[in-house]
Length: 316
Image (cartoon, rainbow, N blue to C red):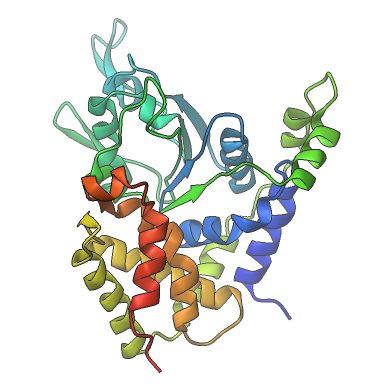
């Protein structure tokens, strides 16, 4: 008999798979973010389905959905909202921006200027925004899905380290295999818009499912030695010769939570080191800042994560 968290994972695989080809490898990461109330950064070159994945997930989650397109002239007020004078009431009335939604897709977030990117910090961390000295709450399950182009692309701004740290995880979209790409051509090679038509038929998860799945994850035991293993990985990143910035305490918490959810999804009663290793690439890599020498040599953040996991002793 499957548990609520396993049923949720199967639901996401089924519904997202109706639209996105090869979604199986990203579903576990999406599950970690959903249940831990984290935000998701989807990175890859244009045309690989990043926006389609985000829109499909938003549809599967239900609730109110808003989209923000990152551009160089996008201003903080465009996403937060502004007070507008109401002639009938003879006073200023706040008109909320697209941030006031359950699921917010920020498409090409790194094409927006640093000022607008920084405006997302409070919303992502505190689930609230401050406007005209008034704090306004965002929905309890407020989720940001942001897509990002590689920073080498023209017209992009690198995200600040403080903002990257507020994304629980990063999903890297790579070129699909020949078989997967052949399926994409067969499925969407017509002259109509089958992707958008299929998107309209995506079912929305019930409101009671997420709390039940979170309760499942809470019951998974975390041994002190396992927590110590997460701390050892964090400490190793801070002393790594290839890095100028290692894993933060927020990142260590995210890693432990993702490992806990991963253990619950496979039906385990306790978190194992392998759960930490499975979660680490998505949770840790985007938080690391390479030294200039490592960047020039072509070292990737994922390579450093692999070396951290290989060098950190595993508790027995």
